[in-house]
Image 1 (cartoon, rainbow, N blue to C red):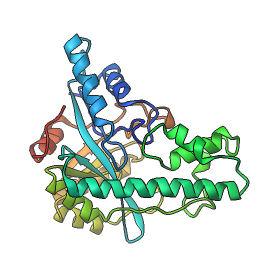
Image 2 (tube, one colour):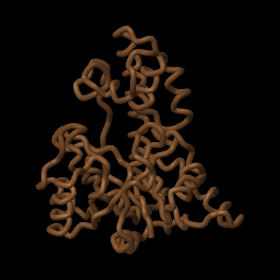
Image 3 (cartoon, one colour):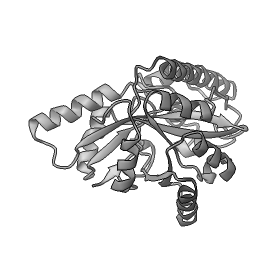
Image 4 (spheres, rainbow, N blue to C red):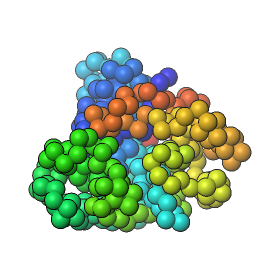
Length: 288
């Protein structure tokens, strides 16, 4: 079994539609792929339709299941982090309202960043950023893409620096983030399980402490992402140790964004036994 539990589509900041994610999972030889767009579940239904269409048509040789999930934007002690939620009931009113609040904040934030960038001389427009987002949850990557398109920066990576949208950046605007303990509580109440995404990705910016991770585990977090493109051997060893000490399920994922990032789908995977543990802990909805 080849299992990738972290992928984004055009429902947030990925570059391929949910149906294409399913087809690319098949092409990558994956048996299971999770759709984990930022702060929303809008891509779930299309992914399910694509999976079932291919199954009915007999065109899938590898892909068997799509795991419905989300990547929730969180913050604690001023440090940003992401909490992956899987197999929860998307109709849970409290969780749905909390995610909607974050999505609204992301939209306002992106619009404010466009205004700041324009004030710095960047000839980009809010209308163009919305076109790039194409109906998905608007975020910094879409503003970054507009900066690249306008010739302001040579690449999306260059947009995520202090000059523009990076930590302390001239055009950066903070957004609403969920308290991670609330994220864990809400996903559990909706019958799902939570996994902390890329916990030691220190190249992205400040990271939480081991004590924070222990507190998340005590609050009911189920797993922790170990195999990830932003984790080297030392980080993976440290996460493996933490997982063992805290009784967390270690997972692996590509954090795929299509062409927006260079890591291919299926580059990092989750052990089947670990995956079974996650599924066993969920009571919200079944896999597609």
